[in-house]
Length: 462
Image (cartoon, rainbow, N blue to C red):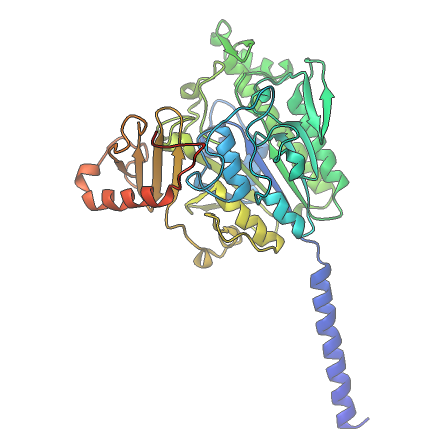
């Protein structure tokens, strides 16, 4: 064989190798995405964030095997707008749903029919999407019924119905599922989520798990509550009342709810291991807003908001600072932590990058995939974060770097003064230093004006 023939053979083999590698890349399955959203769990309600009254070892395992974020934020300070922000990648100055707006007899006011959401985007990349839990973004049969977005749905359509853990019905896709009022819905919902994973283990899936724990009626099966009745007997004569329910020792019930949820997260982790999906699945866990004070829950006793001021319905840190944990075997460094300033509206572009699909241009989120996978120098940063809330007197907040601005009572005074805090020195937002930093106040005022896009439905200044 002459030199020319040898060269040709070498070139052909090299080309075949390149094509083979390229083909292999195409055939490699896209990563599965699991996003668990707790309901009204505060920053301090997980052991890995400082909870001492009960333990959450399985949730903590996500942190142990992955990354823990310490400067992550919810989309809003109540249910529906947080979910809209999460699903659309937009903050509440920009997204369509900025507050809770009920529809009778069941459901919430819908998003527009053409709204772009995470499951719709992932569908373009070949993902099957399943939602198990609480929707809260469109009544049954509406333009944003969950089945307009997800391939599979099981749970509560309506967040008002989700006040009760022993409901008379749930929804399975478009089917009304009659229940006996004695079955713990959280267990049924989680069982269906595990079934979804088993059924779709061979192709990329997006599992969205907006669980109802720990909002807001303190209800859990007695086998989960009993150990905490013994631990907290001083509350046995205390009653918690919410949405027609009455619970004795709501302190024990709250702890029981959280540990039962933790065991379910453990079951999901075990299933991923059994199905050999750990290396091809990213698991994330967060909460929709700060801790509530309803149904007899005592966030002070549990230190549910950690070192922060405020609770659910506040735009202080306690109302919007949220846990975020993420694990992905072989991709996220075990036991790592992040101070990246991030928010729920970052999930849409992050999931798009994971799936290999282009996110919409008009969103507020940034992908945090570089941070997750150990490339912090490549990670894009937010110019600022922004929130607005049209209940409780109406308020705005923004964070830029370590500066945090809050404006309250805008209904009474649209020109209400800005409170200014330096979170690097005052994490509890105890000392308003606006008078000492007029230039910073001016800049934060500009941000509050820039970020707010008027909404006819959710009016901020009227």
